Image (cartoon, rainbow, N blue to C red; front, top):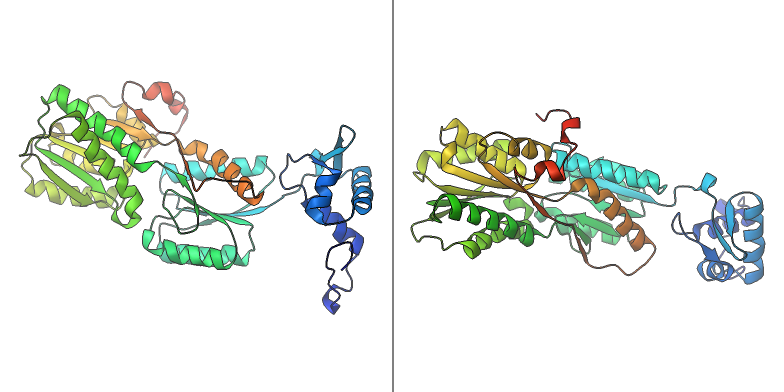
Length: 380
């Protein structure tokens, strides 16, 4: 032991310059780009004695690696702030604007905080998500932000990270041992249900024939709370007639799958007044397309989730039957995710779940909340 720190003496380490090792440990004591530390803080974090820490701080300041703040405080010099951490991001995929917004926001936040971000794409496939977990562990990342939709493989992915002693954050789909970041699903569903119920009360005298719920079964129980919220929200606003049918279809969260399954449902359904609550906007738009193709668009009204650009474009369409979408603001996820990641890595107290804010977006307020949509490329 030297200065309270074990120094390895195997042949593999005989060429190490110990003074540089000690200096690197002092730099590592600054756990985030904005950390301002006193001498005593560095002593505590490194385990080195006071005199050694003083000399190392003095030298690192002299060489331009540290800035002095006041008389007795130090921080990393702005011109040499290195990438303090390596964080892995397993993206859900790039098929929707929601996924792209989360990724782009996270990349911007990591660059601003001088974090090395290693991005892999789960491509919406469980096997790929498992391989990506192995890759990020091999890369020895300090923390993982996991965005994958299949609840059935969540325990397997979680086990990999836990065994590797890597903390991780799960976006929108809970994983055992992870800090949850994302939607308050029941609240978001409740907002959608309230809006559907109020519309039916105003336009259909509160008497729908059918409530069609477009679900995402493989995402598991928590996103399913979004659907329960829709049902509860409708029931809180109006007294649903006994003759009103409740029908569920699994659209798998995807436009094409929803289109095909709602098409099949419409071949059997004779309902003339249908309230449609969808788990996300891809499902909502798929359902809308099915009703339009059948020449029955006037028989439904639809509320989606996420307020993605494609849905916002639909809300701006004349006489649209998509009357709302609940916004999650994925473009703001990056800042929140990185703040949570740095708090975890700095061993600060963090809650088990961090919920994002939600807002009902309608044809009447879409331009207020998204005034810059006209600057975007026209959605496909």
